[in-house]
Length: 331
Image 1 (cartoon, rainbow, N blue to C red):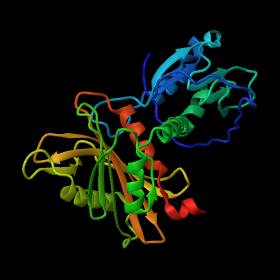
Image 2 (image 1 turned 90 degrees about the horizontal axis):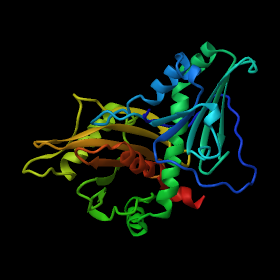
Image 3 (image 1 turned 60 degrees about the vertical axis):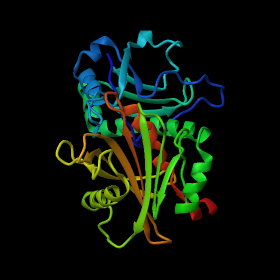
Image 4 (image 1 turned 180 degrees about the horizontal axis):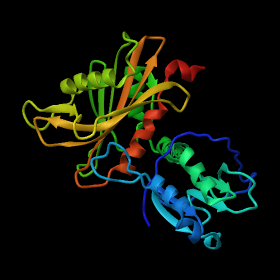
């Protein structure tokens, strides 16, 4: 069984634990993989159906169907030392020894970096309900774990010179992934891309004055995106330019927090070229620079026709969460 998962921060009155200083092996598995430890009788019940449906839910705003996570399963008897180092694990226990339903998180129990959720309860119906009630928290926990891993990796293999140019132009520190070193600069605008024609990755950064209290709404952010892209991101044919796809799958906006806790608006959707036939997914982060009363928007977008894009986009969007203003670095 294969599926895919997503993640953010959580949490459901949960406790956490770690290895207590013991040297752990490296976590195993590929990005976007999750192991569900569940006995067959439970997997074939409403409990299994609820957890698999949750993890198999499509990632929003991709041009093709891709699940949040690729799922593999094992019964408890098969949960041996060989597979315990898996990077993401959900352990489901149902039995009378549990007095109440409980969802518990832990980090780096068998390997590092590893994220685990245990879902325990005395009855199948109680565990099913716990999954239904806290499904978004479960997804977001593992999505954030994947993002944190990607950020840690990108910090080690970053384009430092490009990062310095970003800092000079916008007054922000931001991790720029290795390989993104082609730069186009204009007033209050920078476009950074790689040279891979098969998996073309891009980061666009732009700033504008903060003048409207409705800045962090979907309507305002969409309007601003369209106006900036129309001017600065031309398409391949004369008169064509980048726009936003509204009919097929409109963009979605949610309020979130960056790595340093700064409030931000995340918008994700599909981009298209007006006047040509190109498109793909994008994610943007917009945050307020209070000291200078301006908005900083950093967007990543991918062009990779015919290929799955979940993991590429997820890795690229992780760096958007590393934005720090220079004044915050000095504190």
